Image 1 (cartoon, rainbow, N blue to C red):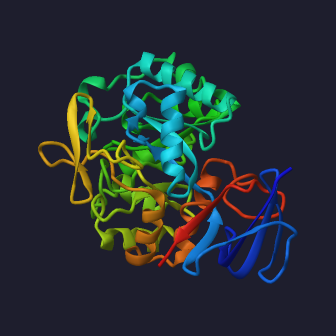
Image 2 (image 1 turned 90 degrees about the vertical axis):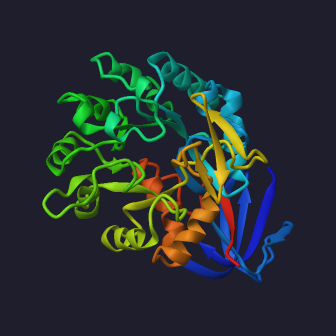
Length: 367
């Protein structure tokens, strides 16, 4: 089996920043973490002084990359393109994300994900089904015409991937019947609230059924008010909820991000990209549901200037969080590694660099 080694001035192992280490791997598994002056018996890749060696980044919301969108027609080939594009920016594990599709489209995405997992496509960890059971009042880039009312058989549909990979579903708690979330969770699905006007009380009921997270905090949801805390208030106040956050400076103002970080910390707040086709591609525009979306000032917008996903990679999100979001570099790295691993139930295999763990590593250039 091939042996590899990396020497780094800084190593973030998922818990703390270590100085001057060599990480050795064999057969895709970490076999040793040694002092930098150790000779491991194989060629060593010396990383630049401004680089941090970290666990592979985990992104739970990736709509596209490499010039394609999952919604273009879910297939193994598109999943490969998306995973390869994001791997260039340190993301080693991701959930390809389907934006409000028909039931047939959901089934197609599940089948493509199952095939990708069976083929061992690097990076594919499961599927994020965002919508179509969301509130039209907060539809965002999801076409209202695509939104559906849930039926009893939708539980079986949404959970059809089974234990083969992780399934995450984003829905509006106020738009699904009592017991719907519980039924999904009992089948192993993780459920987040998003594109929703749910009240604090509705969020509490959803959480009692097993809802465990919030999709892109602050965006497309009920906000924190003086007498109605909404979804934002529920996320900030409730230690049982995690939340994804788009740290690009466009979706959420930095003071709001810093406030959320102070309330939730790096172990409940996760960085997500909500990335579209433009990441890892020279493309400056693409089609989404018949509408042209283009890059403008670092944002992805439609013809009216409305945001539609993000032109953001995970390395940039980590650096943005450390520079503008109130986090230390270690905390920002945790938000892209150990925290999403815990949220997805993958802490035993993902999010850390340790002997016996898989050697899916990221190199962050912090200079």
